[in-house]
Length: 593
Ligand SMILES: [Zn+2]
Image (cartoon, rainbow, N blue to C red; front, top):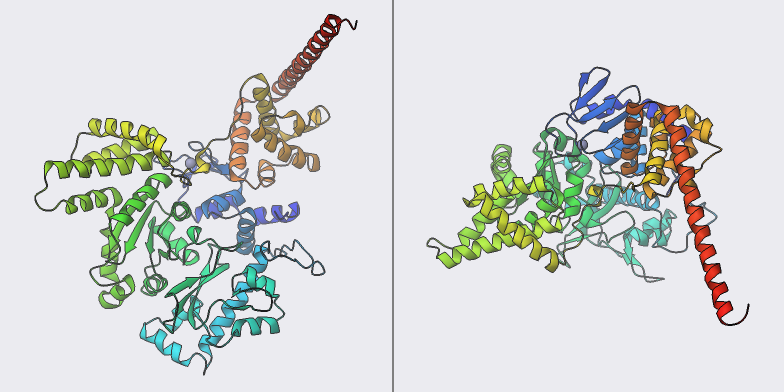
């Protein structure tokens, strides 16, 4: 994990006022000295999200999310700490020295631990290289014709960095070697395949699409065959930077419109996505040859409450609905399903029918519960038998019970789901609820479903009992009133904290305050990279400030901790005595004493 100079972090914080930055993502209203808004990190119906301009922190009093401006960007845009830092540095025009974990005279000798930043640089070079091939007067001539036939505009080609992988032997490899880009890096980036002296280009004779992350960094490529050879589409392999189940094409361009429309539209193809943007529908992203996953849903729920899955007419089957149902329940996001009419993909449809009819299809998307129920019923035919109906009900409730079990659905959400089902199926809510409870029990024991549990929903364990409470008190006081650090810094250290989450907070608090007494909560927050810990810090700080009475509480907590330590030592001592006694007794019995 890269480390950053604390001076740089603080410069970036100062240059990005938290009210301005958050105001770009949600509406804030002033209330007294603070700003209030609807929390983007949970289903918020009354404004629980608090931004404090003086402290430069945010706090949601309903879901516990909190932190400084960097944490907000991390959570909101699903970025790592360094990515969020970079984003805010860019916003303020501050230059961040690229992080280099190894120096040039220490070459890396394995490709699989390549630095993601190096891979991104190799990809950026390759994107320019592919684009230059496409615009080359001779080399790109035929393919430009093909692109024009597909009606992708010159603007789209340029802004989406569409390019061309040539058919010639190892064209990219040769060019990269001339640029002194190491073979190992090309391998790590998935731009070449093979080993040793038999390396060859991964993409041959393909129209190249550039895949970026939310920050616009190029993480991979997708290539469409131009010769008809091989698979129609191939992607970069999984690398240190890219995992197709957790990446979406067009995310960097769609995210703003997703936020303002509160809807994300997901299509299946690169050209579908690009064409939608070309027509001015810019909340559209594409999956990369996989079905829509929980990973995708988690990314999108940072930007929008609702996801519309737009299928080609031939793929919106029951299978897709089943998967989407599981994702919807497992990721706490509303999913609706739509498809373009017979025989078309979204790209064709846009070209033939235009933007308005396309927008109408999205507006008329069916929520996934209704969609699945309608499909099941359609399968029953026009004159369903009682047995057939019962089977449909069974299948529907089984699927939902499994998804509920896998998705850690809360009681409140379950209530909403039951109401929804009752409406969709025209059955009594009570009856549905008891059926679901019965089936959930079965699903829990039978389910081998993994990967759906969302760890960000698991609350931190703060321990219990006298010692844990004392540890918590000390942190509350230090966070709310940092100048008291001087009074205790020689008495205890982070080692005295044995509740893991509190120990991690203590480490950040002690480290920051020993460098800078009176460091603000904003500064202490930026000493941890984990947003959940920052949330905990803001909670502790808030509770500490509410309770006041700092000096006495700190002294009491220290006494309590000392007392607990003494007890521990005493018990350990007693145990030791007891063991000695037993040993003595044994020896006595054996006639040794
Ligand atoms: Zn919240």
